[in-house]
Length: 69
Image (cartoon, rainbow, N blue to C red; front, side, top):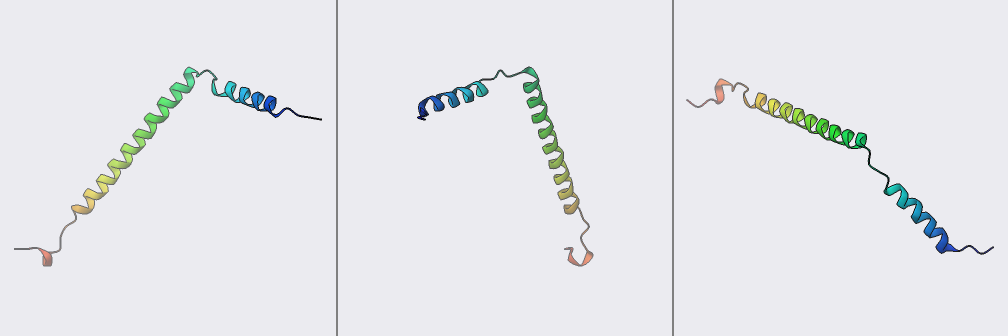
């Protein structure tokens, strides 16, 4: 049996094309916006935590032997 490879290729490309061109739903867009907002908030909380920890280390008391008078 002879198989026409060009027909198989066209059928595969047509099925992929249908999957790619699926309509974007409003719920997908809302979910993407909420996800980006949550990720941004998580990054801001992490940055605030990191800055707070760095400030806490910088404000530690210096022993009297190392102070310049």
